[in-house]
Length: 185
Image (tube, rainbow, N blue to C red; front, side, top):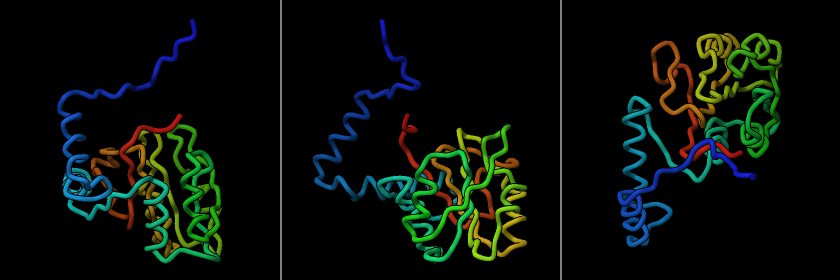
């Protein structure tokens, strides 16, 4: 017998069905009051009041963040060597070049020493990924970014509510991208 055992199963009850039906009945399935309410609630609960913009995917969020930061052709962005493809893909979509740095085998997040070694005169940003709910070492990465005048742009797609040194959100990052769907397998 070959039965798949899912890592997680969505719990969809009457309340969730009613919410979906309300959105469908409104005719506003891409934007509208439910999306605005989600952005406000997410910002209030998880970003200490910083702004929140809902987009269709984590890739789009990272891409928009890179564009907003002015990163493009000729720039390099340091990304972890172990992550979902969207992290590096967003850098390429912005016209920049991803530079892969090794990870810490304990956390699976960017190794600060590897980041320091990967910095060149073309490096504009460091993009740590908080993988599997484990935050990257934001203290060390923030110090490295500060010393070299680099932007720190976080991929937090798998780390809603995660904290670093008792703070839910790193204060050193200019941008944090999250996604609200389960990881793809």
